[in-house]
Length: 80
Length: 141
Image (cartoon, rainbow over all chains, first blue to last red):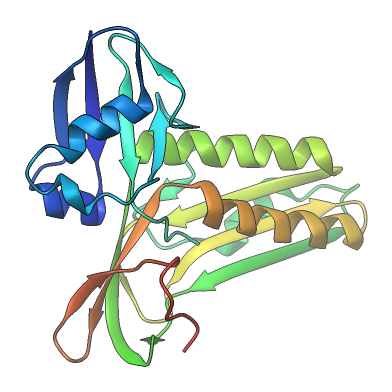
């Protein structure tokens, strides 16, 4: 399956891009997506448990991902 | 409704959007750009967002708040380049009475800070630039 990973702010700076398209074998979780992103150049900047979102809602590492999902890895939030 | 805006926040318009004859208690919170952070002088900052999720999360926060208290909520958050003193976030809550209005307003700002995917890049007087990490040790200095 294919998922699109979105990166923001400091994470986008470190990885040098704001999106990655990954192909994963099924079943896969948000944790599996994170492991793949960590293997990309600059991916070592990700903390052990970054905030993640799946299809515009906060997600947990154990959540399953589906083909076509948009997975976002969110640096510490600083709104408000 | 769009919760994010790249234009100055019009607090009076937010008030007007939820004012009603049966809502006798209105409260507001405005978060403005501060001129210092961690002991350093801040000149200006940029807010960026994961726009579609930020809109969805703001909508969820408003919906949850209006379900928990008998209130109406108006919420806006700025994105883009802001100067010191600019309103970055504004919340107006209207209720029949003040207790619900204050409680709901406090809830909304805390949930916005905890859940809405928005990031802040500060430009300091010493020429450096940094993404703000509220989970880092140096805060409120």
